[in-house]
Image: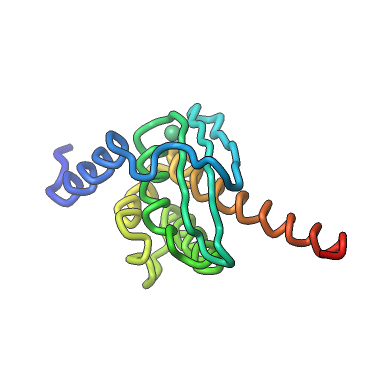
Length: 154
Ligand code: ZN
């Protein structure tokens, strides 16, 4: 079956991100999370720096299939400078989108919206959500620290 022009465009954007991922590398300080997707062999290490309730900087390393690397690159573009609350909302919008749900805020995912086609390939959903789950975990860890700090009287 021949790819339509639109499919070609989607494919090109995904390949560009996977070949030249944005925010690729490691931050010297920050919340670090390692995650993997055993069904495909994708691994990611995500580092996150917060300033107040805003994501000041974010970077990732790892290896995996085109979809997992492209999705991580698109995720970093989408959440940098955003509030924690907005970033978590975007994570939800993304994971619903790749399961075939349409959301009017999908455009806020930036290039990430180009991964909506993943819904047609259920076995690739976990590749596309890996980076977003790592983000959720990093933000979760972070709020855990805040609770601990409160408990110890700071
Ligand atoms: Zn994968």
